[in-house]
Image 1: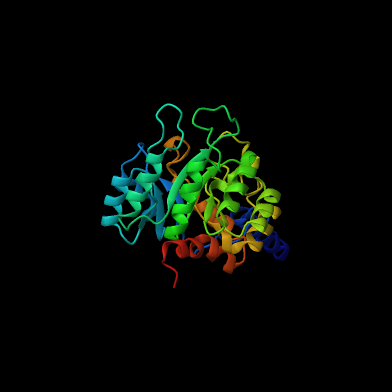
Image 2: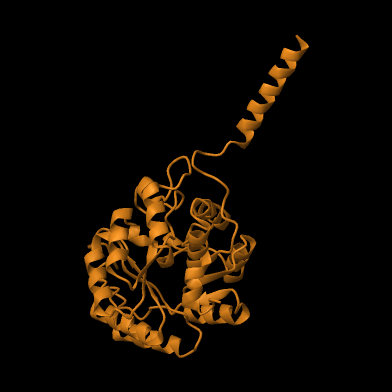
Length: 300
């Protein structure tokens, strides 16, 4: 009797421990390696020093920042091993939002500082509705093409926001100058089949996974936006794309984007570490930091 009572107690203990430590199906240990954010923004919601503190507390090794050029230059000077600014594509028409010759000139001036590591975020088609205000700039707009050419001459990338509905425009832009490196922000909010097709066809295309998570509400169905299933497991189609094109995919969060309201860095970093933990170590390291290091001249 005592023997069976002990067995029962042991079994109960095992069941309790199993309940406490069970992980969602398909989800193993998170990636613990370095992370270098390739896509985040300055925002009015928090001061720049406090924003950097959030990233440092989340144990990131660095961050590519978009925003006001003067502020970025100041931040980079004080945090040269952590902040990697991209040139701000300002100078737009105040009524239509169209790119102008001033946009190109301002980017040139920012490049002349010797600090800017790219151009971005160049918002062209930021929504599915072509009639939405400030959303009527084709990815192959004449000024946009000149921006790609300028960046190519400086051997730096351009991060563009072009929703997947306009992928044909993006293809024309990619074909315009095959020496221009274009980073497709948020993977265009597209699905794996399209992303695989675009990466196969265009060797000068890279994508970042910023904002592709179940937390940031951006006008798309969360189940389409998220890289994972409801149990936290990485969707098999995304896993396949990430492994096949490991050299062309960049980690990012889009903190400060989407109206600047989402600032939970810890939540996003935890999510993406879980995603990367479901890939091979080599792929996780490339996406997590090695690919963007190449653009920043940090690759060893």
